[in-house]
Length: 107
Length: 158
Image 1 (tube, rainbow over the protein chains, first blue to last red):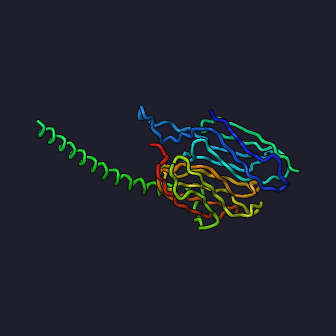
Image 2 (cartoon, each protein chain N blue to C red; image 1 turned 60 degrees about the horizontal axis):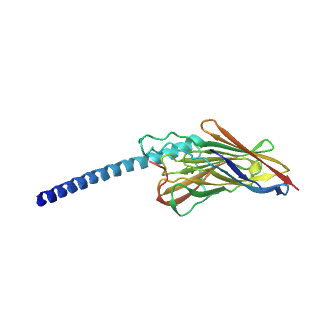
Image 3 (cartoon, rainbow over the protein chains, first blue to last red; image 1 turned 90 degrees about the vertical axis):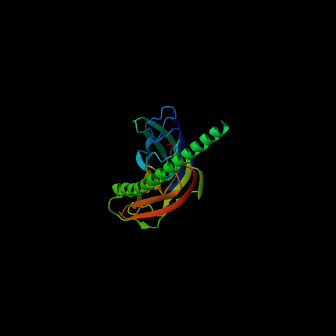
């Protein structure tokens, strides 16, 4: 269901601050909505954690709650010291994870 | 016969009116108490995150639409001013929608490698309210920024 999409520039100058845009399709069911037929609350199921790493080192992290809209979009900055690979991980509160990787060349 | 029906309708309307007035009063009083609850809640949630530090106003800016037509997806950007060096950077940025049933929207964790303490996302807003962002710096100091958003259609389910 959930499919991550990431936008990272292909190249950058050494030490340049770049913008990274991420999007994952997910309902972000916040546990407050009720089933219209049964009247029972729909259990909470959200992406609760996001981590962005560059060459294995943490760059940016986010803890998401029910107040984040469905299909959570996250854009943030990162400083690129050298060529390498970004790794992005989304974790659902059920423990399920999704990852995406993007390489960047410094030249 | 016609008179009878007419009377009956009036009676029922009176009854419905009376009942809705009572219901309105009831929602008014419960609204009042949940509002107080929500206010207490976000302060408590903030305290649980940053401890007893009192955030000073400034350094944190929030970008949000003045009027959000659809509370289900309200775009927002938060930025905290900082040189983002190893010794002086923004560590955490917590965002609260003070009028939501669950006020805590997102916590962002930065490193000097972030380059700039900024993030953009989309949030749900239940009603017209203040959105607050609190930044915690590497030296332990905290700063706060606030923006009011008018919401036309709430987006919290219910």
